[in-house]
Image 1 (cartoon, rainbow, N blue to C red):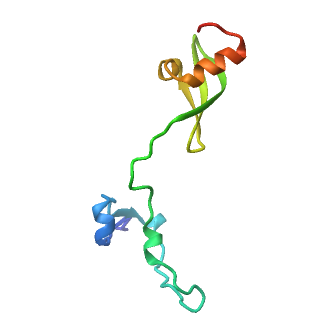
Image 2 (image 1 turned 180 degrees about the vertical axis):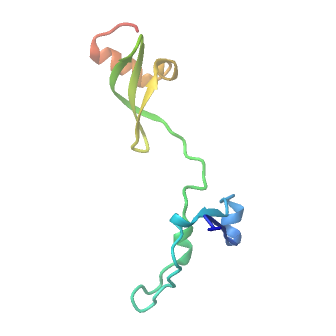
Image 3 (image 1 turned 30 degrees about the horizontal axis):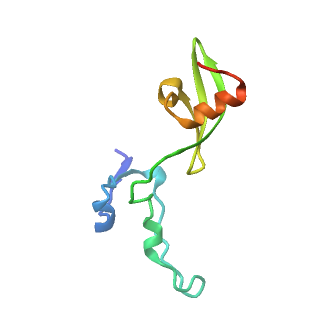
Length: 110
């Protein structure tokens, strides 16, 4: 019977961040050690960066557009971290960015 997954003994740092240790064979690659001649002073810990440890606050920056999905309106919100997502009116109704967007559109209320 073929083995489809492997459970790795992860470094303590990754275990502390609750990284799941079982991986499918399709995502595993042979370890290639750092070559100090090609990449001097390479910080090995940089390979373990799987995201921000600190909680980052997502703040609405601007509403860019709107669309109707059946009988409900959604707004394209650009966030301070650079991402844009479609959000329902219920998520946007208290945002100052919505007030600015509606004013630009010439709409007094939704």
